[in-house]
Length: 174
Image (cartoon, rainbow, N blue to C red):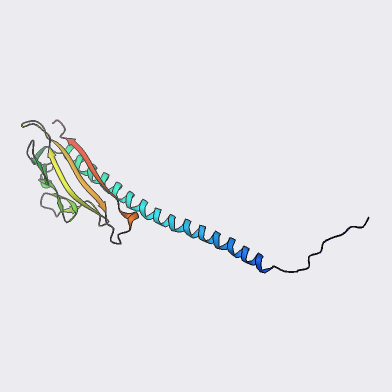
Protein backbone atom coordinates (compact mmCIF):
# COMPACT_ATOMS: atom_id res chain seq x y z
CA UNK A 1 0.00 0.00 0.00
CA UNK A 2 1.32 3.36 -1.00
CA UNK A 3 1.23 6.23 1.40
CA UNK A 4 0.28 9.57 0.07
CA UNK A 5 1.50 12.64 1.83
CA UNK A 6 0.13 16.07 1.26
CA UNK A 7 2.86 18.53 0.71
CA UNK A 8 2.43 22.19 1.40
CA UNK A 9 2.71 24.04 -1.88
CA UNK A 10 3.29 27.38 -0.16
CA UNK A 11 6.41 28.01 1.82
CA UNK A 12 5.46 31.21 3.76
CA UNK A 13 2.65 32.99 5.46
CA UNK A 14 -0.30 33.86 3.41
CA UNK A 15 -2.08 37.18 3.32
CA UNK A 16 -5.07 35.84 5.29
CA UNK A 17 -2.85 34.49 8.07
CA UNK A 18 -1.02 37.82 8.25
CA UNK A 19 -4.33 39.67 8.71
CA UNK A 20 -5.38 37.21 11.45
CA UNK A 21 -2.06 37.68 13.29
CA UNK A 22 -2.38 41.46 13.08
CA UNK A 23 -5.98 41.35 14.36
CA UNK A 24 -4.94 39.25 17.36
CA UNK A 25 -2.04 41.63 18.10
CA UNK A 26 -4.32 44.69 17.88
CA UNK A 27 -6.87 43.10 20.22
CA UNK A 28 -4.15 42.26 22.74
CA UNK A 29 -2.68 45.77 22.52
CA UNK A 30 -6.13 47.33 23.06
CA UNK A 31 -6.73 45.15 26.13
CA UNK A 32 -3.36 46.05 27.64
CA UNK A 33 -3.88 49.79 26.95
CA UNK A 34 -7.32 49.67 28.53
CA UNK A 35 -5.87 48.01 31.62
CA UNK A 36 -3.09 50.62 31.95
CA UNK A 37 -5.51 53.56 31.58
CA UNK A 38 -7.91 52.04 34.10
CA UNK A 39 -5.05 51.46 36.52
CA UNK A 40 -3.91 55.11 36.27
CA UNK A 41 -7.44 56.40 36.97
CA UNK A 42 -7.74 54.10 39.97
CA UNK A 43 -4.37 55.28 41.28
CA UNK A 44 -5.52 58.92 41.16
CA UNK A 45 -8.82 58.07 42.82
CA UNK A 46 -7.07 56.17 45.61
CA UNK A 47 -4.70 59.09 46.18
CA UNK A 48 -7.59 61.55 46.54
CA UNK A 49 -9.46 59.26 48.95
CA UNK A 50 -6.35 58.60 51.06
CA UNK A 51 -5.50 62.30 51.28
CA UNK A 52 -9.00 63.30 52.41
CA UNK A 53 -9.30 60.40 54.86
CA UNK A 54 -5.87 60.94 56.41
CA UNK A 55 -6.12 64.70 56.80
CA UNK A 56 -9.72 64.65 58.06
CA UNK A 57 -8.98 62.04 60.72
CA UNK A 58 -5.78 63.85 61.70
CA UNK A 59 -7.58 67.18 62.22
CA UNK A 60 -10.33 65.57 64.31
CA UNK A 61 -7.65 63.88 66.43
CA UNK A 62 -5.70 67.11 66.99
CA UNK A 63 -8.77 69.13 68.00
CA UNK A 64 -10.29 66.48 70.26
CA UNK A 65 -6.95 65.86 71.99
CA UNK A 66 -6.52 69.60 72.59
CA UNK A 67 -10.01 69.79 74.12
CA UNK A 68 -9.39 66.79 76.38
CA UNK A 69 -6.14 68.30 77.63
CA UNK A 70 -7.54 71.80 78.20
CA UNK A 71 -8.70 73.36 81.46
CA UNK A 72 -11.73 75.20 80.11
CA UNK A 73 -13.54 76.40 77.01
CA UNK A 74 -13.71 80.14 76.33
CA UNK A 75 -15.92 79.92 73.26
CA UNK A 76 -18.34 78.88 72.06
CA UNK A 77 -20.35 79.26 75.26
CA UNK A 78 -22.31 76.33 76.71
CA UNK A 79 -25.18 75.35 74.41
CA UNK A 80 -23.92 77.53 71.55
CA UNK A 81 -22.28 76.78 68.17
CA UNK A 82 -19.59 78.77 66.43
CA UNK A 83 -16.92 78.64 63.76
CA UNK A 84 -14.10 79.30 66.25
CA UNK A 85 -12.99 77.28 69.27
CA UNK A 86 -11.03 78.98 72.05
CA UNK A 87 -9.69 76.90 74.93
CA UNK A 88 -7.49 77.47 77.99
CA UNK A 89 -4.58 75.06 78.44
CA UNK A 90 -2.28 74.19 81.34
CA UNK A 91 0.59 76.10 79.71
CA UNK A 92 0.24 79.87 80.15
CA UNK A 93 2.14 80.80 76.98
CA UNK A 94 -0.30 78.69 74.89
CA UNK A 95 -3.36 80.59 76.14
CA UNK A 96 -5.67 80.98 74.55
CA UNK A 97 -5.45 78.17 72.00
CA UNK A 98 -7.73 79.00 69.09
CA UNK A 99 -8.95 76.83 66.22
CA UNK A 100 -10.53 78.59 63.25
CA UNK A 101 -11.05 78.40 59.48
CA UNK A 102 -9.31 80.73 57.02
CA UNK A 103 -9.18 80.31 53.22
CA UNK A 104 -10.10 76.62 53.34
CA UNK A 105 -7.57 75.84 56.07
CA UNK A 106 -8.18 74.91 59.69
CA UNK A 107 -5.64 76.75 61.80
CA UNK A 108 -4.41 76.49 65.36
CA UNK A 109 -3.01 79.53 67.16
CA UNK A 110 -1.43 79.01 70.57
CA UNK A 111 -1.03 82.18 72.64
CA UNK A 112 0.98 84.85 70.84
CA UNK A 113 2.50 82.50 68.28
CA UNK A 114 1.60 82.52 64.60
CA UNK A 115 -1.31 80.42 63.36
CA UNK A 116 -0.37 77.00 61.96
CA UNK A 117 -2.42 75.40 59.17
CA UNK A 118 -3.52 71.85 59.95
CA UNK A 119 -4.39 70.76 56.41
CA UNK A 120 -2.31 70.80 53.23
CA UNK A 121 -2.90 72.56 49.92
CA UNK A 122 -4.28 69.32 48.45
CA UNK A 123 -7.56 69.56 50.38
CA UNK A 124 -9.98 72.30 51.30
CA UNK A 125 -12.11 72.59 54.44
CA UNK A 126 -15.55 74.18 54.63
CA UNK A 127 -18.49 74.36 57.06
CA UNK A 128 -16.33 74.23 60.20
CA UNK A 129 -18.57 74.16 63.27
CA UNK A 130 -17.83 73.80 66.97
CA UNK A 131 -20.78 73.10 69.25
CA UNK A 132 -20.43 73.32 73.02
CA UNK A 133 -22.70 70.53 74.27
CA UNK A 134 -22.17 71.20 77.98
CA UNK A 135 -24.79 72.56 80.31
CA UNK A 136 -24.04 75.91 81.93
CA UNK A 137 -21.62 75.41 84.82
CA UNK A 138 -20.66 71.87 83.73
CA UNK A 139 -17.27 70.88 82.28
CA UNK A 140 -17.15 71.56 78.54
CA UNK A 141 -17.92 69.09 75.83
CA UNK A 142 -17.25 70.05 72.22
CA UNK A 143 -18.55 68.55 68.99
CA UNK A 144 -16.60 69.41 65.84
CA UNK A 145 -17.84 68.97 62.29
CA UNK A 146 -16.44 70.04 58.93
CA UNK A 147 -16.50 69.13 55.25
CA UNK A 148 -13.26 68.29 53.50
CA UNK A 149 -12.76 67.77 49.78
CA UNK A 150 -9.84 67.00 47.52
CA UNK A 151 -8.81 69.92 45.32
CA UNK A 152 -9.21 68.90 41.69
CA UNK A 153 -7.99 71.69 39.41
CA UNK A 154 -8.18 69.46 36.31
CA UNK A 155 -11.81 68.56 37.10
CA UNK A 156 -11.11 64.86 36.60
CA UNK A 157 -14.12 62.83 37.77
CA UNK A 158 -11.95 60.19 39.44
CA UNK A 159 -10.44 62.86 41.73
CA UNK A 160 -13.75 64.18 43.06
CA UNK A 161 -13.92 63.07 46.67
CA UNK A 162 -15.31 64.74 49.76
CA UNK A 163 -16.40 63.72 53.23
CA UNK A 164 -17.97 65.22 56.33
CA UNK A 165 -16.11 64.60 59.57
CA UNK A 166 -17.52 64.61 63.08
CA UNK A 167 -15.78 64.28 66.41
CA UNK A 168 -16.41 65.10 70.02
CA UNK A 169 -14.42 65.45 73.21
CA UNK A 170 -15.05 66.42 76.80
CA UNK A 171 -12.76 68.14 79.23
CA UNK A 172 -11.11 65.77 81.65
CA UNK A 173 -12.28 66.20 85.22
CA UNK A 174 -9.65 68.18 87.11
